[in-house]
Length: 248
Image 1 (cartoon, rainbow, N blue to C red):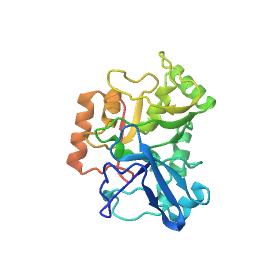
Image 2: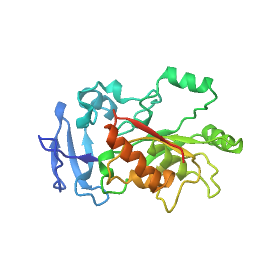
Image 3: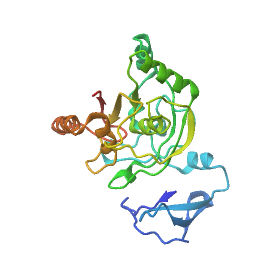
Image 4: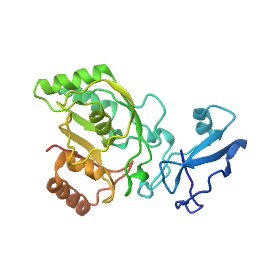
């Protein structure tokens, strides 16, 4: 999937299907079709001459937002939990975690369990439903989350993408099952949360579909108070922004 931008980094709408795009290093991309009816995202075939990871390592740059303020190195766009490539953008709610912080949390009795995520492009979320994203919930993570709830503890998701993955593999009774694949689940207030008791998340635009997910966790009144306080204090969103912990 590709999104074209102008020299001014503005969106290039309705790109011509069938067009060939010349890329650095003698590579090229061929636009094949619109992605799920989008007016700016396309499915493309790539002719790179080498594996995708190697090509991106030489010529690629991470997606950046204006509030970031500077060009951070690629390592800054990885969380300490990252083990394998696959995300279009960093699952940014996990970025403030350090090895020292996780060690301290574990020492205080907070359990940490992994979920593999391949997050999509967050700019798609503006006035548009999120598209399918790949995930993997290991059996050990499912067992641990279910045990915590059985003990009377709380299961907290770090990021909205984690919410989407865990709710995809949750039964009607809230029990989490191991699984992997591509999820098209859209969590809304009407559906609610089944497996989770809270979420640690960044700040999202007012027209983002993420807000529906957060309303499912917090309810509209609490969420509005959170965002009112964030606006008053000048909190920042996106990858290098601030976080809030929602515990209804």
